[in-house]
Image 1 (cartoon, rainbow over the protein chains, first blue to last red):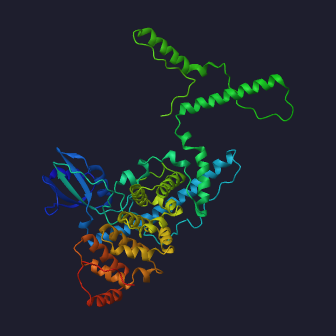
Image 2: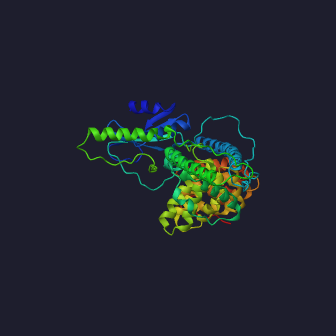
Image 3: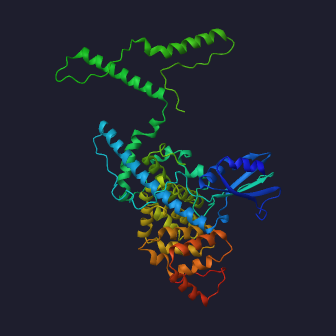
Length: 302
Length: 192
């Protein structure tokens, strides 16, 4: 028991804890209730202790809203509402900033179409009298009380998504509720939503973004550099040809950056690899040399 | 929490749009349930709320409340509970005539659905909508809930009665209940 308390004390101040004899539990399972002073502590504690092994057994940690008092429930709801409205104001400001950034970048691109404006007028959150005391936590309200069941036999949690409190929680909160664990399905960007006029503008913007493409974003830097190199080589060759065949008439075109193709620095990596390959083949003649063609080919995207 | 710096607004929008599309396109009931649950979960994060509003997911959630499938209803009202915490989304729900639909969830036999409905009603209570959300049938319902064994239900109903209803409303509802059964079991549908 003391070890449990020590464990949970790591996450915040505990107001009270007790054993729950009346809680329906499996055989060989002890259930305890821990009440934290702060909701955020409870949240962090759950995230870090649920399903973890503990002295040969396994911990199952869940929220216990049924042990709240009326006042605690009331406070929880108020805090949550306050937080959401403050957070959505911040998000609105962020959007404005992102919109400004995208307007700047698209004006430097060759795209001539004007960036459609997302209607921000109605979207800006009304700033009303929000309680000024800053809770200072980015996390969202949950009951501060937690059930800890420590059993020697693990029991399978139903896979069904469950709401654990009367505030709709993301049940697998970090897996589902937070986008940082979800990979945006790149494959789905080709699907078109039957859009109504109201969000058509946003779709235009997002389509343009698509053309800039998540694919490019995830390309390894070396591939990017190599493809750029190849483009420059192509352009340089083209320039050389025209200079030979005809005299340029008219305004001088802007100079393209000239790459000295004879420059040895371009072959440094290639040479290094070739050297290594020679060494490898020289040393280990027993093993068949696996033809890893150096450079030129773009590496496969991971 | 959702790292705001990792995903731009348009990334979020695209992703959520993909989910909505999947919900509309798939024929599988299970897939719809899964997607709906995901959307309801995503509605918990304030940084998604604007996108969900733009994608008219509030309408989607409202449509789910009249479905036969109890999971659809539960996830739908769950999503509305999350969204209604935010003012703009709240207003969108009110404008779409959401109050009667939410009230109808109070008579569900699923605890989670009822709990979400009570919280949603609280969120939807404004000066303009108060008459509707604290209609005498609703107050009676809450009075009954405040007497149940279920602590979560009892708590929420108590907060509703204390914070969203006047004493006169509560007294009036109590009088009307005199003739009826005081038992918390077999809660009849709210009278119009």
